[in-house]
Length: 279
Image 1 (cartoon, rainbow, N blue to C red):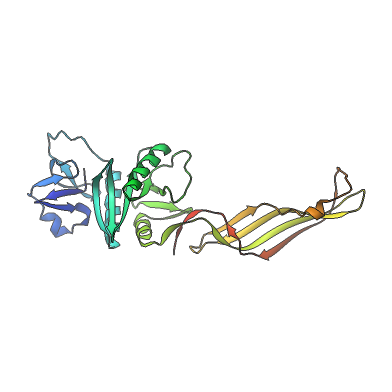
Image 2 (image 1 turned 90 degrees about the vertical axis):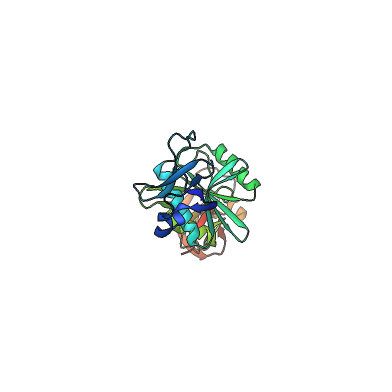
């Protein structure tokens, strides 16, 4: 059940047609993409326009209503951004669900509803990269061992038959908004977050034998905020003052005389990689 077909020698994408254009396809010769078999137009119960094979066709390629709907929404979102959208685009070792093109840039959106191991994600990603294509994955589940990063953009998709949404940096947004943000540069991978302040908790200890006072850093919490509005806290490694640690050699328990928490302005980067979506 593809979204694209060749009709009277012209390739068309069903979700990109208006009502008049869609009605005009009735009775015309439909050649499905990418298999090349004959077919006809149809509208699903969800209102998704697509093409189906004629009866008796030996092609058994089929897609679920969920997969078809998400592809249709992605293709429409791509076109709304001013990019050229095409579906079921064949290439060396792949058939891209949705291909977005503009001014030499090419981005593939792959819809992955069935479970797929991380190795297969990486293999298919490498296949696209070898052809100069960037690939974004819209998946129903996260493969074991996956680590978020720009090398394998993967977003968890839910409500496939309703109003599909994806999770970006822990926040849920509509699928069309993500597609638009990725193509316009409003969504990109950030390796770190700008910090604003650090809260340092220290403890003053006294050696019961020599009376030496030393200060120990217990915790350092760095607080920051990304330009997209994501607020984060990160527990940094406590700072150790070598001079303050020197003592008489006593190994027993020290006497705690003061516990203090101070806040300082800081400009260090919080190492929190995430997909950043501008508001």
